[in-house]
Structure formats: structure tokens, C-alpha cells
Length: 598
Image (tube, rainbow, N blue to C red; front, side, top):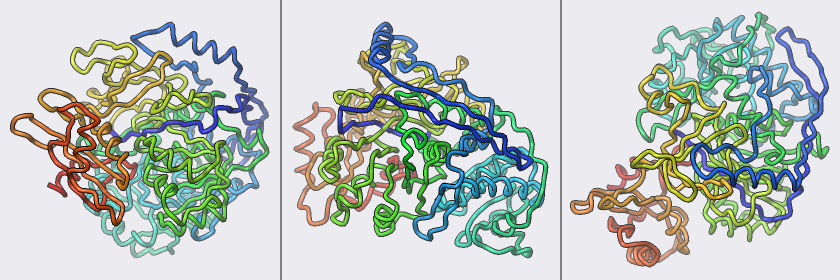
């Protein structure tokens, strides 16, 4: 399972509690017309509301835990594209997406028109039929939005893959998904035109930034959009399959995660609660700008960043490939108010000498995903940015939950260090004992189960894996070890399958990694279990140090030994390596680490 670890650290305890929702509604219909309606949402928190939450959550000590924030708003009966763009009359002439490297930019009105044209071209000229699968093999570029939303509006199913995968990995996923069309860029076109014809029933290829090549069955995207192809767009039921991302595969072979339009829309709506949302464009009159390099081919980047930002009228700044030069240039040129990062990127911002306060002067909020942020890293960044009004938001999610299930509310007490927050509105949870499977109460560690409207339909063509993950009562077994406190704030301890068993004692790799990262001069670390004749397994650390550091194995082992009980010591030793292998979402690839560094 691919998961996201997020959490919110207020740098200033005084947070404005009043929030006002978006005003206005615009829906682009399949026949090219706009239907306009008007509404307003008044969302204000109060001390009474906060007290009611507190009283409500303290009444329950174990069993099924509900969100202390309450239920989410009614999930509209809309497909994902209809939902994302329905409020855009407030910002129809504003920029929607811009490539920070090339400068290519689209307004909301232009983007919405091209999405509709793309949908009609895919059906009317490319020969695709509703319910077939289109694959995106793309970096983060503005046109990603056009083709993925165009495909979804055409009733097609979208899957995507990391462009850095090998041809064999890509072919294996595309065969499993039943891909009939691939969208790519010139750099990857040679590989795609080799893979495509090998797929059963393959129809055609679209190349963004390329020309028509009839001999290779390739359509240039711009020629498709400018030709004015027409087709009747289907009525799309929200329960239809919309997205087919693949789980990370770190606990087995990659599996297609079936997410419906309703799953995606539900997760966007769940984030609308006044206790969670930041000030919107409609409320402040300020046009928010978001800079992200996190991949759209991951559910966090796709629904948690791209779709949510467009839904809120944000100006989305994309970078196709991270380089320090491009990223720092984008910070100065576009002055983003929001950043989406992973811990390694935040470490770059906190530690790199080229990053100054000027680069970060416009930032209001940062969202970090993929792995927990350590307190030491947060402290480094606080010192660099030197702005107590900036907040860093984290939470928790998975590919299988569209993705968010936990988030830290705006009024999270500063004492909740290390938390992933509270349940998303409309989401339920249970914590089960790892041995007896009984339901646990506060401060008892066990496996997290979640249930809600954002939970996937199941795994594609894999009933066994689906039934092992989602039980008959609809509970999704996350495989993550957690506990929760009296206020129903949750804390992740580790992955069930990543726990190291030392003479029957469970050792958390994350706990040891966080300790090691406290050592001056260490910039990254990973801990795995290695076989031991007497103990079964013992912990081994892999560390990355700053250039010029003189740390040795004994220094690190002594530091850890002074902080932990005897069976958590690094009896498997310490190895110094150049980098920690991670998947695109930032998760440590522990098996690969052990293979590469035996």
C-alpha cells in the first residue's frame, strides 16, 4: 500500500478561527454551455464548537472512533471533473496552471475549454470508448491536467506510472490495467511506441509537444485540440471507476487501486470543514499560488494537490523535474503562498546555503507528505524561515483512501507533537491488538483500521487481495501500527510488516531512524532488520552523512544505545551509503536497501 504521512505543526498558537467558504458556482456542461447558480457557505468555528468537540470525543474510550470534527458535508452527485471546475466563475480569467521552467500557462477558462475538447477528441477521433483505460506517462506539466481531466470527462479510466520506471515495469502495469491508449512526451515516445503495440487491443498514442506521426499511430496533442473534433460525452455515474493508481508494491506486487469518481469527490469534500481549511481566494480576495514538484502520478499529487488546488482556484506552479536552480527561481518569480514538499525537500530548504529568507518570504503554509518530519528538521526550518505565522501541515493517507484519512485541524494544540491529527470528517477508525485482534482504547498500540466514503472500490482483478484488505464490514486494514490519545489525536508507530522482531520483541525502524537523525552531521537514515542466529532479527542502520563528517559506526551505535532498551540497539551494525532508496512518494524501499547494501 502506498501511504502518505502528514501532520500540522502550528508555529503560532494564535490562529484565526473564522473561515468563510467559496461563493459562486459554475458547471461546464458536455454540450459546451455553462450553467450558473449561486450559493454561499458560511463556515465559522467558535469556542462553543471546540468545547462540543472536546466533550464529544471524551465520551468514547474504545471501539469505533468517529471524527471529533463530525460528518462531512453532503457528497454531491457529480463526477470528478464536474466537481473540480464547478466553482470557477470566481477565477475564470485567472491563471490555473503554469510551468515554471517553460512559462507555458493556462487560465481557468482556457483550461476548462481544452479539457472538454480533449474529451471529445479522445472519443471522436482516437477511437476510445467509455470505460476503457488511458495511461499517462508524463512529468508534472500543465498539460497533464488537460489530458487526465479530458479522459475522465470522456468516461475513460485513468492510470499513471512513474516515467523513470523501466520498460518492463511499465509494460507489466499497462498490461494489468488493460491500457488502450498512452499519453506521453517526445522524450519517452520511442519507448511508448515500442510498448503500445504489444498491449492487447491497443489503439493509439498522444504526444504532448509532438507532431502527428501517422506512420507510428501518434497524435500531437495540440493538433487534436485545435481540430475541433466533436463527440457526445457520456453521462457519468459517480460510482463509476475513474482512477486506477497502483499501490507502491513494497509489500508485494503492485496492485491496481480502483477509485471511483465518488471516492475522489468525497475526499475533496471531506477537507472542506471550517476546522481544516485555510483561507480561500473568495474569502480573502488574495489569489493563492501553490508550488509543487511532488508527482501527479502519485495519488497525493493527483487528488491531494492537483485536484484540490484547481477546485479552490489556486494558481498551480509545476516543475517537470526538480533541480535546485529551477526550484529556487520559481520561489522568487512566482512567490507561492503554499508549498507541497517531502522531508528531503524541506531539508534542502532548511539547510542549503543558497536558500535565503527572500526565497521563503511569501510562504503561508507548507504541506509535507510521504514520511514523518522529525522535530529536529522542523526546528532547522523554523530557524531558516524565521516567520512564526507559517504553519507546516501534515496528516496521513493512502492510495487506497483517495488519499486522506487524518489531518491536523487549524486549532491543534502545540503539545500534540508527532501526531497525524484527527480523523477526516465522515471517517471512522478502530485500533486492533496485533495479537488478540480485540479493539483497543487510548494509548494502546495496535493496527489501524479505517472506514469512510473515500475508501477504494477494491483492487483490480484481485478479489483475494481486496478481501484481505477490506473486511465484510467495510473496514480497510492499513497495516500501520498506531495509538490515539484522550483527544482522539492519532500517532503512527510503524508498519506491521516493517517491525523488526528481536527475540519476539517488536522494534520500530521509525523510532530508531528519528533517533539517528538527531546526530549532528547525519542527513538521512534508514533502519532494517537483518537475520541473526540467536535473536531472529536485529536492527541495522544505513546512514547518509554531510560531506566532511568524521562520524564512525561506534559513535552512532553508542548514541542509540544510550537512548533505547537493550533489544533496540543496532546489533546489526551501521553502514554508510550515498543515498537512501525511496519510492516516488518518499517511502523508504527497505528491501531494495538490503539487496543493494548486503
